[in-house]
Image 1: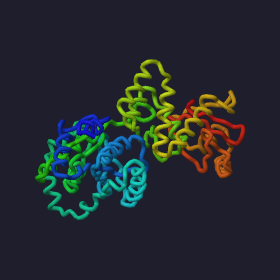
Image 2: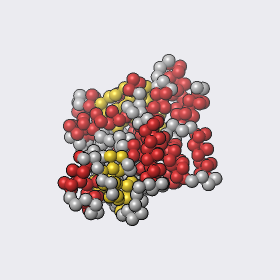
Image 3: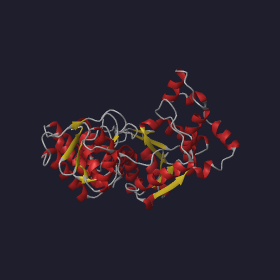
Image 4: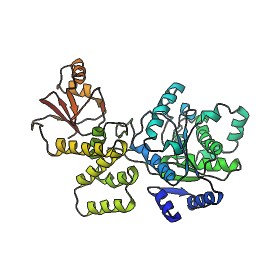
Length: 398
């Protein structure tokens, strides 16, 4: 690719680059030096599961890998034990070392569904933070002021409201910035909610005599409710490790106005291809048809083409053709995530939880035509049909 094409490829879906010409200058300097760019992403494994919202930044890292650059994937096993209040009114739950290690293992395995492990440098920030002494901590704190720290929106709001902010919380962005110093980051990528922390990284690198990293922010992907940032705690997420049927069903439940955004941030469709889809929607094509393509594409990305095709066919059979589903099938709307066992018992489809468990073991319970082998949780936005045996059906959010 030419430099211009490379940059356009890397800028797909990006909200902001700081400084504006920083990406181009970093690429030119790396070419002059005959080296790869070091592109950083830091994650605190507060949950073991990756959803489509997480994949927005992971896919951007993959774009850098495609162009031959080195990804430095930092697992915040140390900072994960502190809690990051980014975009929140209170601190995130602190995790034990064992919880972090367990989550990190699963998180890393799922991340490699997107990233090339051969082109990824995995680092754990406990490597340096468990060795740092107190004088070095004091030196780090001397490089940033309280006034600048209070420019961060969530800190500022809590301070004005008289809600407590611990000194430990001030240390978090400094530690994230110090990560950039240690691994010599050229570029750091994150969601728009991480902008403050990413910019602190530039300041801290400068204080340690380094060329500041370029910051690239990406949009936050709304979940299936179409309103809130995708989050497992809100039940509006689409997990990449979920079954093809679950992924496809959740994709079909997103609001029509999010279709193009999902293509932009969650697929490899080119800007020209996305513009064509946008034109089709504007000229009267049925949004459902475009959403079917989206569902098939995303399932194929995390499984394979045949699985994606089969998920679409199953969906069409269950929801479009309504084959084998009686007209009087009861329908319920979930207001919060619920397990299949609870749903079936609470809605008098099966008499007891023990009976549901027995039916699951016998392979007699299906969701959208796919047999389940264990109890699963359905979030409040998923659309599906649960089949029990040959004659009992229950529609969810239909």
